[in-house]
Image (cartoon, rainbow, N blue to C red; front, side, top):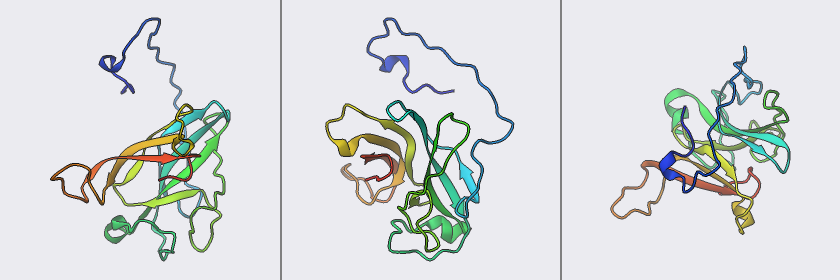
Length: 180
C-alpha cells in the first residue's frame, strides 16, 4: 500500500493520525465490461465528491472494434496498430462505491453514436488519469479538477529534452469531463 504523502511531505502532523480502514474483498469485480467499447476495463482513480454526494470514477476501457477514426478522435492509437486494440478513458458514477452507472455523456463518437460514457481516446501508454482531485479553492473554475499521469508529449519544457518521450502530464477540467 502506498500513501498519498510520506511523512517528510507533511508540514504539521499535530492532532493527525493515520488509520487504515477495514477492507472488504468483493467476490466479483465492481466494474465489469458491459458496453461495446469495454471488451476490457481496468481500474482508475476514484474520487468522492462531497458537493455532489457521489463517487466518480475515471477508468480505461479497451476494444478491438475496428472503428474508423472520426473527426473527434484526438489521438492516433499506436496500440491499435500493434495489438488491434483502441483505448479510451471513460467515466462512471456511484452512490455507494459498488454499483456504478455509466452516464451517456455525448462527448465522443463511437460507431456513429455519442450515446456513451467515453471522455477521450488515448494512446496505449498515455493517461493523465492516474490521480484526480477536485480543488474547490482554485480561483480558476476551468482548473476545478486536476489529473496527474503519464503521456507522450509533443513539446517539452525542459531544455535539451527530446519530444515524444513518456513523462508526467497534468490535465485540468472545469467539471471532470472536459479536459485540457
